[in-house]
Image (cartoon, rainbow, N blue to C red; front, side):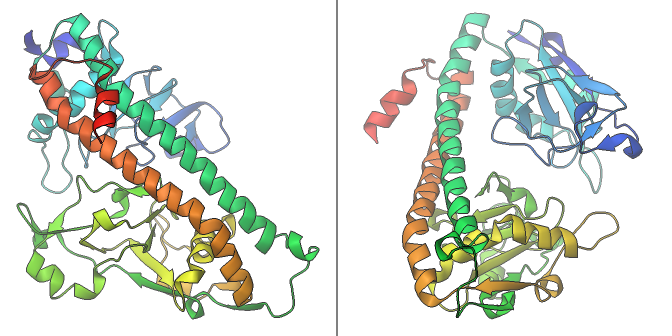
Length: 396
């Protein structure tokens, strides 16, 4: 059925309350200004508002309408919509299909962006988008097929959460509560500066005019660090010649730890081999052990610990949004255990990290397969069937 998007779904454009009504204590409704806390499919909420402007209902598709335009999630509960978002509601209730369908046609919507600096789309852009929808039964079949991929990805994400909780529990037991040593810091352990134990590097600040469109090397920004992994589908590129020349010393390595330094401080990811080649950029800092890879597990656990996050939040500067950089890192001291303890910790914890990295690799493969079959399902090139995921898993 060929029609306009506005014919088949209701559209609610966001409107932001005044900031004095915001809180983090859970008062009022959850509030999103934009896509900052979007997840794989569902957002997280860390801000609430007691002044309600525009709302999205449970299971509404929420979409960013300001740069970057087109990021999509489904809200699991009633929430307040900021001006950077809109909510979409299928008039016949097929919300999950609508979510996947918007992923399919969002490229056309992005082509309607306006604004010389910050791209955006408005209600008319969304309402007047030309679409071609299958019948309701086919919509449900398509949604069921694609849901199977996302459910497996969700299982991997949950498993990784448990693995990281286990690592943090061991870190706290050993290096915060000192339980194996009767609650006291063992002799021979020292406090030293972070930079004496961890190598770090801030990105160079690649500018818009240096971007290339067709081929080159991707570089990360803070939006690429999501849910403990790197999402590079929308990463910008710099020419290969420039990356391997001017920015050669900013090229990342496998097992580098990258951490966001502005906006939501402390978001992290481990660089995997399949991410490479990849260039560092501003608002992201890379970390690695300074002396031995056997220290990696301790370095990673420290950088993802409540203690380090507290350092960031305490020392971060910025009148508009918090940020930190090398000058703040130089002010941080950390506990350095003995070499034997560091090695024993690595032997116990590194297998947990390897398992988490492998789960993320599998999840990315599933996401790539899902995104490959998405346009073929929508165009009718292949039939939809929930067993499709199982069949593909057998072949791999």
